[in-house]
View 1 (cartoon, rainbow, N blue to C red):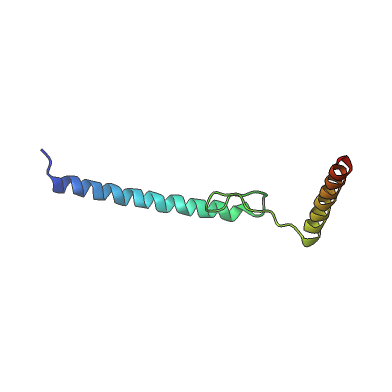
View 2 (spheres, rainbow, N blue to C red):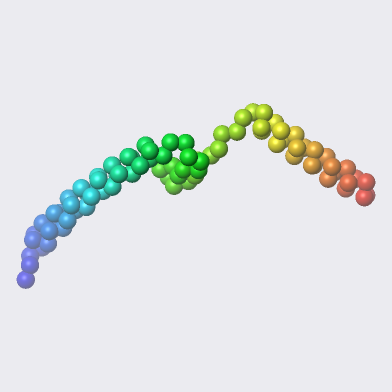
Length: 81
């Protein structure tokens, strides 16, 4: 029958092996992220896709278009009432 100290020793050896593998995996991930460049929606470290950067002019066009839609909808609703 194996003693607890032998089991603990084996578990510690396995833990060191896994830590080494994790280090190699982290290095591979870092290398691949460095190759990514600016290729669209690349996931960040948290797994969420990066947000697109929109210019102020584009945000203004979208806001103006939304205001126009609301004005049209409100005018139609007021006309119906």
